[in-house]
Image (cartoon, rainbow, N blue to C red; front, side, top):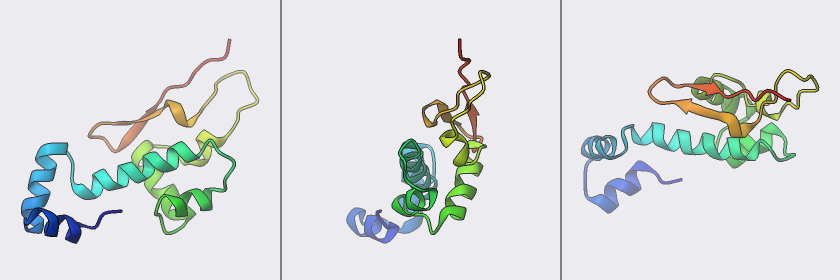
Length: 115
């Protein structure tokens, strides 16, 4: 993980100017960008048989609860839901069909019907 102080040193910009230019280039704050990349990494790991606590620590979160709060805020569901393997014929939920809704901090869940 890159710290803002490192970016400031490399670019020669002060924190506020760096944040303005970053937002202009990427459409979001440096913190939000970093958080979403960490959540994307955690989401990718959910399909593996690791515990949620291990996934959280590997993605740079303090603990499983921290990951769960941030994941739910960003995607609208808990990280346990994509891991669940539904036995019913109604729907299949996986980490691959969750995507953030731009600008809303929530996600839409594409639910695939079994046929």
